[in-house]
Length: 308
Ligand code: HMG
Ligand code: MG
Image 1 (tube, protein in one colour):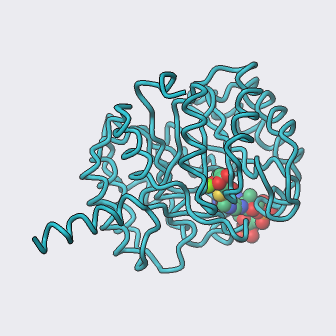
Image 2 (cartoon, rainbow, N blue to C red):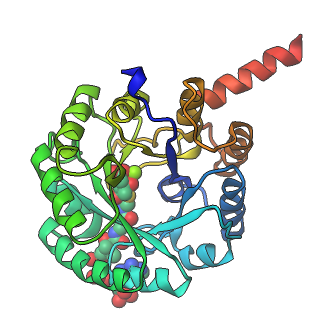
């Protein structure tokens, strides 16, 4: 299995979006901008900076336009943002976003709770959004959420994800991100689904997005990598969660993924020390301990050294 690991992996950082959408403490626009600017300086090549969803649904990111406008853009970084509908797309365009991420659930009830529409209505809306975005030469990825389990319906038929993937890629999006929104996937389930998908599409067209609720996210990343997937979504410190998925905890922590990959000589282009500095900074900003294991171990190693 290890012989098959890719040499290079792309980390798609979702902390400023998936992370901050779930925080209860108010974070100022300036602090969000500083956070993204710090991330831009770590070697990450993809950062999801915010979400152009309704401020009534996600008040934490109501300053999306100001944040996307004020960040210092690094030419080596692709900046993206979540968009739910045409109104979100117009807001994204107004601040010059070149990449967007749409989202839909594999389970009907989560989709309805998350965007107030059925899956069929969402796909209809997407069609218009995708058409306009492609006309403007924007790059589009789509998250498929609740792929391995739904907080309202329980288990989810993998066929739903396979069907959605095909419909969406046929419309010209560049990638689907397979979301274990509530963090319940077993590694063999991940393998089974990805093997099915990869019979029809290339590994570059798939990213994986694991939340770490039950501590399985790194194992699931490893399974995906061994099958040829080369894009992993993660969130610095392990921030994150979906406010419309009760029980969902944070994403797999970026520093945990990067440290694991580097320990196996898989390149990410990310500077782990800078990442840790940024993680400490954002931990202080949100005002609670972050779940990242690497961050904690790094702290205790430093403490031990300090007492010698
Ligand atoms: P709705 O209430 O049905 O919308 O919400 P509506 O079209 O009836 O409009 C109602 C009001 O919202 C109107 O304003 C619109 O203008 C406004 P009013 O006339 O009442 O003043 N509105 C907007 N304002 C700003 N930006 C917009 C926008 N759209 C409408 N884009 C809607 C429907 C989709 C907007 C809402 O349900 C929504 O924003 N939902 C997003 C919820 C969300 O962000 N959830 C977390 C996402 S994370 C996730 O899904 C998982 C993921 O991380 C992957 C994984 O973990 O698996 C991606
Ligand atoms: Mg998520």
